[in-house]
Length: 103
Image 1 (cartoon, one colour):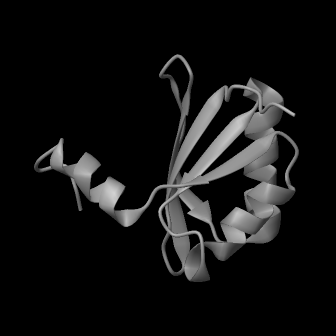
Image 2 (cartoon, one colour; image 1 turned 180 degrees about the vertical axis):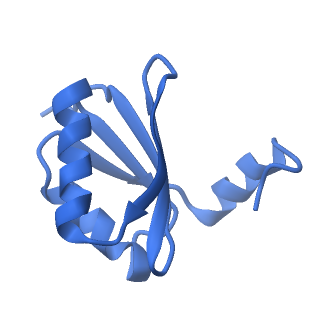
């Protein structure tokens, strides 16, 4: 089975109470850039809307366990949404490419 090419890429910065997500289309258009609630129903609604509006979604998280477990579980249960993990070392290397922009 092949995975369809994502139409939307979501970068998710996991936090304890809420998360911040930026979603870009494959053309680079920003379609979501704000807090993403740590609530199953609201997470599912946002992911479903992005999928219905744009097509297949790839959610990339920086912490797939503990505080990131809920968005990962919700995304895995949504049609048209795949999940990927960006390890901390890779995140730091990417941040090094953009000095002054990292947290």
